[in-house]
Amino acid sequence: MNKVELLDRWTKEKSEDLYGIKSWGGRYFSISDQGEVMINPYKESESAVSLMEITNGVKDRGIDMPVLLRFENVLDAQIAYLNDSFNSAIQTLGYKGSYQGVYPIKVNQQQQVVHEVAKFGQRYHHGLEVGSKPELIAALSEMKDKESCLICNGYKDEEFIDIGMYAIKMGFKCFFVIEIPGELDLILERAKALNVTPNIGIRIKLSSKAGGHWTESGGDRSIFGLNMSQTIEIVDILKKRGMLDTLKLMHYHLGSQVPNIRDIRTAVREAARVYAELIKEGAPMGYLDLGGGLAVDYDGSNTNYTNSSNYSVEEYCSDVVEAVMSVMDDGEIEHPVIITESGRALVAYYSVLLFNVLDVATFEEHEVPETLGQELAEPIHSLHEVNKNITTRNLQECYNDALYYRDNIRDMFNHGHISLRDKALAEKIFWNTIYQIVQKKRKLKFVPSELVDLENVIADIYYCNFSVFQSIPDCWAIDQLFPVMPIHRLLELPSRNSVIADITCDCDGKINKFIDRSDVKNTLPLHPLLEKKDYYLGIFLVGAYQETLGDLHNLFGDTNVVSIRLNKDGSHDIINEIHGDSVDDVLGYVEYDTNEMRTNYRKTAEDAVKKGLITAKERREIMSSYENGLRGYTYYER
Ligand SMILES: *Cc1c(COP(=O)(O)O)cnc(C)c1O
Image 1 (cartoon, rainbow, N blue to C red):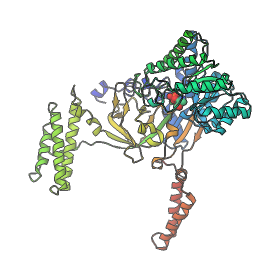
Image 2: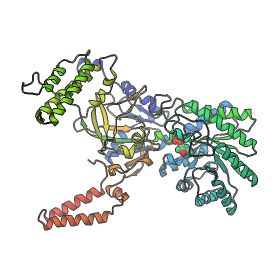
Image 3: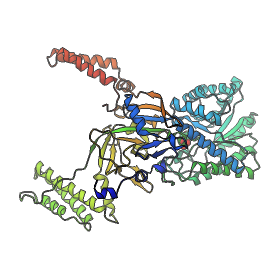
Image 4: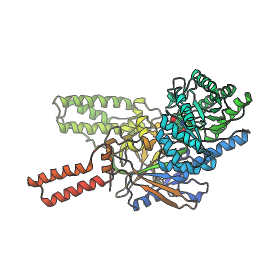
């Protein structure tokens, strides 16, 4: 090791800082003294487990990358965290009601998640929220606790309503939330027919609106919920039928990932006021359901930026409780049970996507000859001149000139005045020029705006074994940022500036925006690949929304999934593994009949035998490779 490297030794602290893991990692992720990412749902430090150790174990068992790791205890820890935070705010502020959260199934519908929430949530009476008939049917198969709430949102047909009515008969605290005025008649009709006293809730539209991606879910123009005149109409209908005593819950949903606590407070106050008025109208009420919105700080910036949140879970809880309490106290109204439908915040930390890097395209430093042959076209000489005269003082000028001559050369080539060989030389000179400009610009205090983004032009491309569309669809669809980082080698300098490409060969199948505490980064520093050594990256906080929104772009299917239980002594158990889609699975989804495909291909091969293109023995090998392909994993297999 030479002196400079010794002086400038890379450390775990530098990695922590560079990748921001302490800011976005919640209470779960950290870096070990060995330079590996650790996960730990417990407070004791000896419980931490290295993701690299887990990866090696998974690999040894023959489970291929990409793998989605789900950590059961992280989910438990988040449920406990949210409930403990609410309970402690309730205690501190002297609130007389209680908190009873519900988990909205749509955020991650996987059976395991719903099972775990229902099971672990029981001690807090943390229930479930459903927005459709299939979700209700799923919820009822997992729910055991009759104290927990079961909230039915979404449009409800007769079948949906009947299933909910029977649940009430069996003692479940099931609420029908009215989203459109027309629903009430059917609910009352079915209640009468089945002889059940329903629990009715209404979803209201607030005038408050929140910042963030999902602003349209809240506010007057929201497509869901009842406006104030419709709300009064519902009250009047219930009064007329002598059923106002069934109106027990009021609900609103401001939208998901609300990054600003001010928006949350404003909405809670407005909702609490409507709730108080419903009590004055004579409804018994008792439950105030504040919907979702509790944000996750994906970029660790702790700001009101879309991918962040400018408040902690504790702050959220105490602000909510305080706002509800002050409105109720003003109206001398009994403190209601507070419900939130926090989904994202409960499950985001729970899964990590792991994958290996397949290859890297580096930006080579192109060698440029000292002098050029006289026969070359004029603009190539001019470009060469620019290349030889770059200084920190004329970067912008050199950049402009280089682009100008490059375009000239391109035109001349298109008109047949320059040969392919000469154009290739010109390209080398051009890229060397850009490379030098980027190197020199790093020394500048003030970088001209046009040159700022040049860094990504010369970034390495790391080709990675996963699909953006399948595993992090929100990254593509709404430009959401997720933390991405290597899970090992974190004591080494990550010397390459990189962008990430997936294997879908779609030009959108890439990650070129990365989290940063003060900005968005266009490149991610990564380590150079080592000969014959695997390099693993993780995408973190992917537990919310990503799994079910994923699609089959280029027919890359579901990834392998491994569920892990972390033990207090630092060991871990693989408690479940689900093999991802095979090629014949995904072809089946798009309506191929794989038996017919085999038959067709066998005919093609048999024809080739007849024509003497292949031997009968080769036909057997060809068919067996086709068969292996059909049965294989859709991702890159080693
Ligand atoms: C999506 C949704 C939620 C979940 O929101 P998060 O921000 O993920 O907590 C809650 N309630 C309703 C009605 C929703 O549609």
